[in-house]
Amino acid sequence: MDIPSNLTGLTAPKSTGDVALKRAAEKLEATFLAEMLKSAGLGQTPSAFGGGAGEDQFSSFLVQAQAEAMVEAGGIGLAETIFDALKERQNAQ
Image 1 (cartoon, one colour):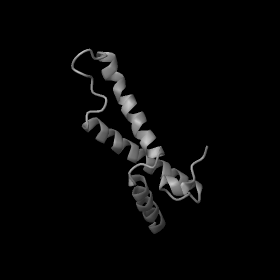
Image 2: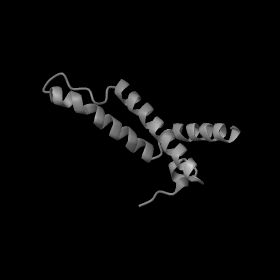
Image 3: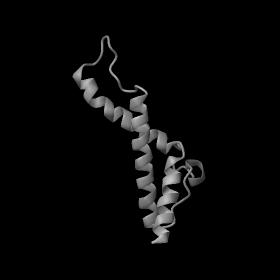
């Protein structure tokens, strides 16, 4: 099921260049959110009865997947701001 562009926060891209800029902006927002989730303690192994080294190694994948899901659900608006700035810069060149 496709989500209408007005619900995702970003305007619908008009060209293939806009699609690339939109994806780059969304990736950057997902990376930012992943770092914020890590700082909040998401993905840290509990002190008692933790999953060991394996859990520590794979928790970053879980955090990244959760951040990407947040962006797909609309994110925090950072991707839209980044997209607008990149588009403005591209148009100025």
